[in-house]
Image 1: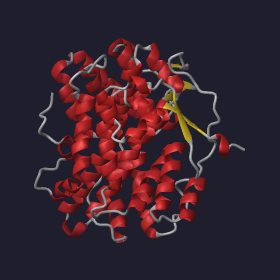
Image 2: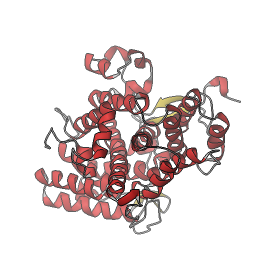
Image 3: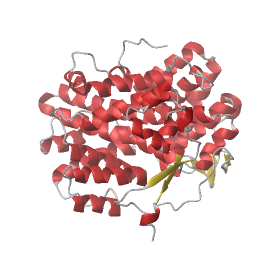
Image 4: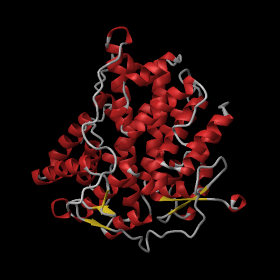
Length: 419
């Protein structure tokens, strides 16, 4: 277990309390506090249930390893090694190396990690993590069926999806803070040194891997619905591929985790309430990132970053929600609609919005692609460091949200919008 007084994100970013960037994080105090509570809920819950601490830290080491977040990877490997057999630590390291060099697909099927070395459950978790880490758009009921067949129950799948998605957020926030801190240390805000990717960060062919096609199961059904075929500027629905909790079965803790009581009517929140501590901490992180307007970046621009990330990751549902919020906060509707129609290479209309788009895309494509050149472009448009932290948080958070929406259910076109 870790020291509960340590802020993990600051630790992984190499920030001590006297660092000016750490002080700026304190201006988004609820985001900082609840990102830490998310870590506690997902890595060190009081009752891990069937998803053991060893499995949780193995997944964390694997995900941070294939994202090339070296400081985070070392941290999670060290904690894993405290209570795992050396052979498991070695198996995780071998899986990380394989995942860095090959994407989730090979020969038309899904790559499988070594069940003999990892065990059936953990190998399936790595298969799923690899897929939603690099290709969240392709995660579907079949991927959940693969977990179900490997012995993962519904509650455990939700916690696993939350953990992987939280780590996608964590490594991106850490990367952004590292680049900011390095830049602050360099004279006159000159470009700070930035590490380049050292291996494949998108899907590549690896014909030596064993592959298999996955199938949905009775516990992870595919819904017969009209799914969106493009990004739209109207509301969409969403249906989970794992049964959400029934309203009448909610405990007091699960109701409290909703934050807003009316969310009990939404299948998405009834599903995530299977892990109430993770849901509550995640929701409070979200609210501070997007609604704390004490300085920093404007709401329209934060929602723009969310929309860009969702467009890049292929999450039609999240894009439909946050494009509208950006417009409601004064964002240029013509530009936002062009982003939806044309993708992240669209003309963003102004240098400021282009700088936000470029930074959000870099952070999303792979965390280590975000560098000092993105800071320079944002600063040239008048964004201060608190505003840049808001952009980092907004983009990173939707690398969390998209992976949940895409991997746990299906977007649906409401009847009133069907042709």
